[in-house]
Amino acid sequence: MSLHPLDGKQFRARLVLLRNAKGLIQEELSEKIGRANNYISRVETGRIKTVPFDVLAKIALALDVTIDDLLFVDGITETPDVIKARIHRWLETIDTKRLRKFYRLLLLIIEE
Image (cartoon, helix red, strand yellow):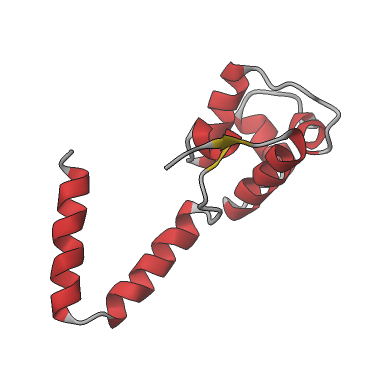
């Protein structure tokens, strides 16, 4: 899977999406990363143009995502919670044969 970097506007939109998916307001995320209450607001509105790597790492940790999730397009735009919910719904509807195939494939991926 190839990764393509997000531009500034895409990064800001991704940050908003991930923050909202986690149920956090801007001030809460700012507090979690040890910054001023309006820091995330300034990032999301583009008033802060460059976010230091250590701050990106703290944001990723607070949002339970990877730095890659913040900075790159990988073709998957759903949040981890949405992905889990979709997999769960799918697992409830598949037949036994497909379930076993899925399980074997998952074991191969996990045991790498």
